Length: 249
Length: 211
Image 1: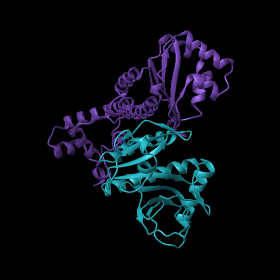
Image 2: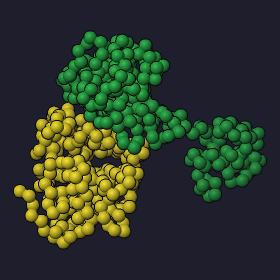
Image 3: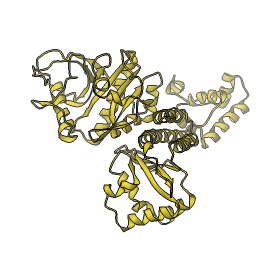
Image 4: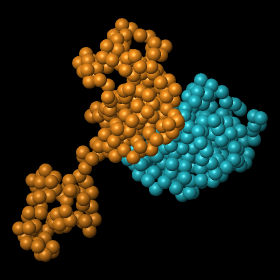
């Protein structure tokens, strides 16, 4: 496939991804089509959500390398990471010595990677200043030549992959904090509770047994993780299950 | 904050436009060091003519420029079609349903947080305007920095070609699609910020245009 067609194909597939697993599959396929061996999509910090260091981590680097990297805390002296902070344009790892001055720590990291079988690579930074920093890297097994013809395609793939990663990570986060589900009947009872009705009155209004009303309300309380009706009403108002119009009319 | 959409017609000085052209000079010439013409303190080129539209967000009190985008028609000379056609690997989207986004300028006087807000309002207005005017997409020539920001707004984008090194900078052509899902895409990305839009007549002091 021609280089640009590969880029377009990646963009189309990544926009179809419903979760990070889908995206990873698409990224791996593109990595291989472009002639690379490894990929690593990383979002370093999401400054907007400072209480939460959520990161996108999709990678297929050899596990042994990942262990060495994490156990020895090599992140801080990774020259690729340092160089990637300064630009939003992709660069080959073989040029990193032209971008930053390599000290002994930096060289140690590069040497350690080589020992675990990782040779040359190409990193595409995709930073959003003031929001979050991210990179998409493609790398080669030691001894494999890096496909420099694929660099421009890698630039596009990297940027679109980073954005898809951000979008899907947000989606995953939102799904975690989704509101509790309520059935229509539970909601009907809740509306009447918000209007100050007693269980007996609610039973009359809805045409059901009083014990049933109590059951519905108890289940709703369980779903919200609360004990008191007041708490239930407040939370249901907050998350939109109930509106003020429902409660006040 | 209100956004004004204007175009050039006459000769009196308008403080909003004047401050826009001066901020363009500060951003594109002084900071980004672009090699573009400057005339009496304004950054202005051959595409700043009667058919260019300017989406401008201005300080409601002083009416000075806070942020702006120049929007060009694609059924006449524009940047991608005329200056960088090689950036498109296939047929370039052009015609009455496409516009080109150029010269996004955020005033250097704004703090970072304000700049982000103005940027979101500007793009939200561009989306809403497009939906009201049957515009299907916005094209543009982007640096990699700009490309990343464009994608982060949340809308569906398509690459129009591979990036190329042009005068030492990597540039690429991109298309941002506008459809019924775009507003929601902005909302999900946290970039939707809708406000009032006013359309006003533009006025401009007489200038000698660079050839």
